[in-house]
Image (cartoon, rainbow, N blue to C red; front, side, top):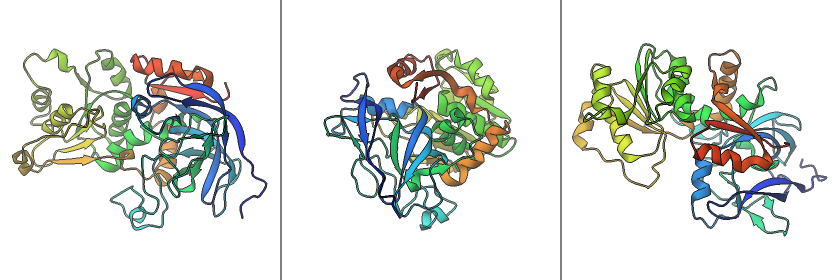
Length: 379
């Protein structure tokens, strides 16, 4: 039964009141959890490019609280919540997993149909908010996670219990970039030992793909990035070869990749979100079996354009939400792999700040100076 003593909580949150404006740390009110919901004390969160995209977007959802990659501790649970109790260490995720619908029971998808993924705003079961500013006005959430607040409310389908021995920084990353990148190579593409892989964009997600491909046994992992500094960074994560598109003269990236891989890579991952790069990613794979995974969201809503003739030769293009990983099933597995050093995602963390310095995290990411910046909520 729901604990009738549950009350709203006053806490600090970084509120975004208008597109592209600095976030303001202010006192807010967080409602108690309703049925099938969990209220979580956020220990740390991190800044993702998706948060920056939503921050820039002129949207009626403002004012809102951003953030969706986090680690925390269960503070309280609502009615009908099973398997969680106050004090549990957890990772909230933008993807849900109910384990009862046909999709959750299937191996071929990670998209729950009982409580489907939506961009929101609003909780996914009733579309309402759990956040209010100091004047009692509603604040919109972000993908029903909303981690730039010291406390948040998340649907039970979107909460994953993790071993308290897992360092908070590692657990935090598994909720988005780590799970998405590694999952894309491991769960969605199913990269095979001895195969060749090309990764377009060596940001956090791209580097996590590299780690996933290395974990799966790929022997040739080509990183593609315009930033020459990413060559050394990529090698730290498992990149074996590096291509800078600005240094190829009249040759296209796909021409160079095809020459390096005897006709194309077995797997290609687009982690940037540019239509023309997606096209090059497809053209960089082998005829007959080449597989391209699209992880980047096209920034200008441009279509992916390829002549149908090119698909006659057996190439495959796949979209990806959370890398095809099922959060409740796969995040604990990935956490264990991090603990035994099969994965080294902690190297993605380049900066750490407190909540009051959250705008510094935005500056670092926008200036290309950070991969992942951890934001500690009580500092």
